[in-house]
Length: 425
Image (tube, rainbow, N blue to C red; front, side, top):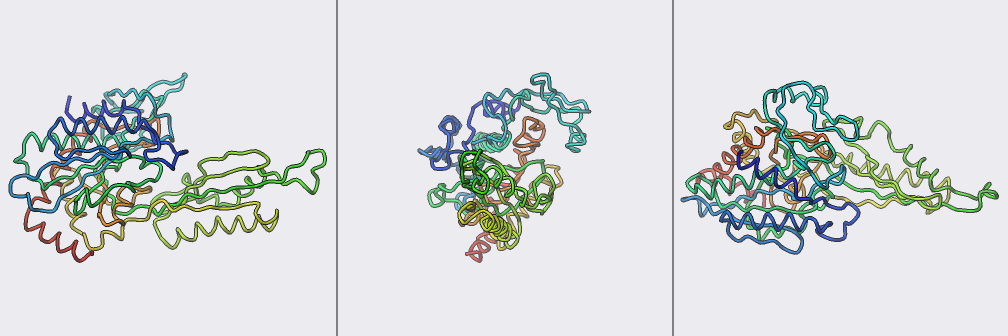
């Protein structure tokens, strides 16, 4: 069993989902501390320097540079240690399936076969005759993003075992609560000490992202007027009815299930309440900043329309921006893209530049001054009990990362990079 596969199978069995109902604390779930401590212990055991884990479950470690690259700018590699609560995420039981074509079956749960068909994921045909890691179908797998963690740690172990492999000083960062929009907000960039970096948090092997959604969360609160239903005529305002009207006024064709590519969306995620009061949560996404702003205004306009009908204060909309499209951070750093694409090709993978329909920790880090595009992990069907990752993708990603870090160990290239970074400032 390869090092990266062994690590991945262990990591996904450590429960560490973030808690979307607790955005006041970091980490949002105490379970994330367990994953953080495990990673810190492993980094120390393999010989990383300056290993630390703080009270917020941020894990840092340093891989010293190879000979001759000690004075070059440090490079960060970052993945998140939480998993999503969008699917069952406790008690993950991974197993390796030998895929021989047709549907990929993760398991049978309560009489239902949990499978992925080639129609759903056309790439499946490319993995015929290969080993694929799935959960047992009762939970997600956790490749998002424990595959990224396993790949970074496998690279670190490889470099520490053979320091002659060229690389600059590597700053490793494993962070909590990415899945709930925290976005590495508490990562101390001065302490980290990297000039630029990459998140390892993408999907299919070869995909590369330097553009993400702009993202906001909208909390819609509907306050009704309750009286006894026997004498309700002309008086009662039922919050459930008004909340239903609000949702029907949100453009129906602009939901995630009807959009793709660079199309943004409104996505209702949670509804709670009674006839007296209802809260609705939406996430709002768009790559284009102007359209993103218009989407937020649309929700405000719907509230204003319903308040005219039912009375001022019946509907309120509170918007919280979660992250921004990170593309603007790379205008003066083209080498970050060039190096990543070349690293894929050197590993025999033809890369694809894709505007990711989501966000990464790099979304916030890039706009905070650490340009940080996104490398693929090789996983599919994230946030689903059908999540899977081919073993070959795990292994190839480690090779891609090795190719990538070598490109930051070349003095001539580093000089151009430093000039580019200075221009960006």
